[in-house]
Amino acid sequence: MHLRMITVGKLKEKWLRDGYEEYAKRLGRYCRLELIELPEARLPEHPSGGEIACALESEGKEILKRCEGKVIALCIEGKPCSSEQLAQKIEAFAQQCGTICFIIGSSFGLHESVKQRADFRLSMSPMTFTHQIARVLLSEQIYRAYQIMTGGKYHK
Image: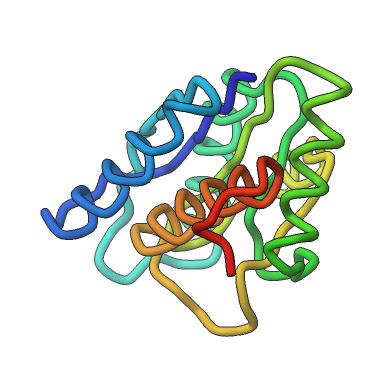
């Protein structure tokens, strides 16, 4: 199974990079995890709505170029699900194709074209997280999903 995590922005803090890398290493037993980090569109200090829309469109085009297989987009209007439900979704998608792409947008979110391309829209929580923390949380939940699917001890 090939998992691709497409993210907008880099992890700037060492503790966040360490967290992501730990789960990426653990996932190596179960799948091939590929990380694609795209640059955030540059905006003025106080962007207007139009400038944000243009940035999202630009980021969206770059994201869509890298999407293949089944796509799971993290977005605020997505569906929340339990760890068990996420495991079921990953397992079902894995049976349908060889690649699953998880998408984390910038601090302004995702362009509508990316949401439309998604086979599933996932909400991590009704709370707001930075896109950097979302990457660590998502990698942990993907690892937990594989533990659930394989009957591992990690998931309690």
